[in-house]
Length: 134
Image (cartoon, rainbow, N blue to C red):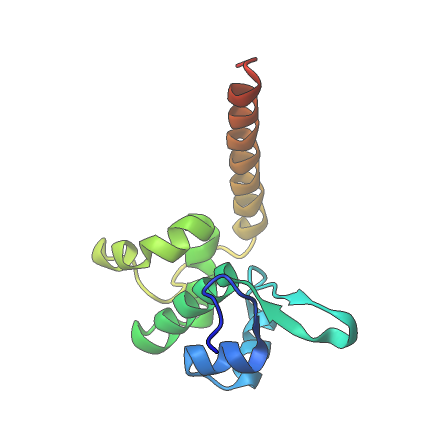
């Protein structure tokens, strides 16, 4: 019996679905902070559908589009999860280089803080709208 698309996947199921070895998924967790599968007792990983979508995007960028690890990290930092999943082709069309060319490493923490602040402000605006106080 096949699993539902919404079901969680073990690391072996995720690896099979993505066409990469399990050790590659573990390695990607060390390089991409946005890949955070749920872990149960004993450290068993379970991948949610969104985790699988992120992993598929990472695989496509690294294996098909020629991005480097730093390039994927930069793309995610600049575009966030939504843009990362849907916007990687647009970034290449705009002439954005796949590698992390000329990036200032000191700018990364500030960029992440700005992105987080923007997400929090959007969430607050949505809460205000829903509560009728905005």
